[in-house]
Image (cartoon, rainbow, N blue to C red; front, side):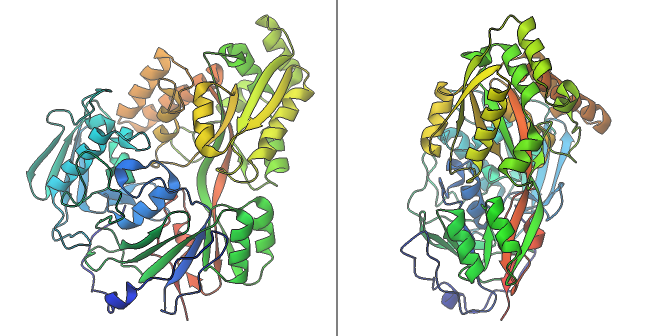
Length: 534
């Protein structure tokens, strides 16, 4: 996700490569760096699945990958439009053909040249490996469509020379260039990465602004400036240490005491309010597009009845959830598409209005549903932050107070939770979403086509046709209208219920600069922007 312009080599790279000693605990922070500009980034996003782009589809992993690897295009801070990065140009020849021309002279951090053929290798490798934790589905427009033996489709990528790559898509898709901004489309070195399995030796190589110098899973990652980087994103800090914490309380204490210089993800509303009163730090409530929602199993249990799903949608009080569970730090969501995105509307508000027990009772009565309806809610207590339990309890309370439902609540930690929700242990379960790319389709297709990535059993030919249509529409007005129809159908069928949209909040000590610009809707922490003075 970055760009390309020749940059002077950073002096003293050998000295810079000397990393901070790894800490012995996720609750402790390393001593500060003594090199001007260098800083320590603290986060609770410690569940890094893989640093290999073929093996991860999660924000903690992508945060490192965005800084180590390049993609063909990226998002400039505050922008929702892809702009050149490893490519000097990327454009549609027609809705099924994309041509990209690379900047010349680019190198990986080991000095190997970056070529168009490396892109073919990178994309084919991700599709072939088909790792269950990977994000190759974002490149599915190039695949052969096989679930047993996925591979590049014949002729999907053409490289007429070392600096030109042409993508031939399976179907018209005007979101493909957006997908090229993601780490799923990272460029890797074929000499380093095996073609049929993930790289697990920790010797990850990219062509981005930073190189990985040290990594201790769950503890610390140390990134140093890539001496071969030739783009415009010259790191302002020659070294960035990412320190992982296992609780928002520990992270809040570390930033409040100056043990870390920047803190990003995740804080409870209470911790944010406390830090707002700390004169030693700045709290930046960046514009975000984090999305929290509830998913029904539509093929089993109470969620198999559309009337039950509609009744819950009629009862949920988003304002109460925002105020009681999150102290007003989130905004109620009445659509899956965030405000400001093309086609965004208030479909659930239009369909259901204010929470109403009488209307919910009528929905159930007309469908012949016997009340109270037993329903089991699920949530994960740590992965999405400490207030997930408060939201689950608030929703269960709203359902039980209606006397139309008998709601219970259960939880599991993330690794187990992912399996349990797919097994149907919960009737209605909480999930969260950070954008892969900044297009409304990223808040539609992953949820609504063929049961969504969460495999909830929802199928609708009408929905599939609308999704296919909007991805190929070139007229903005027409596409916006189609997206509106998708949102209205979602509110009618209720395979999921939107809950809230959140901010991208970061906290920094007073001697830090360059933090606020990276806190945008893309959720890319651009480590090359901040630096520490003094």
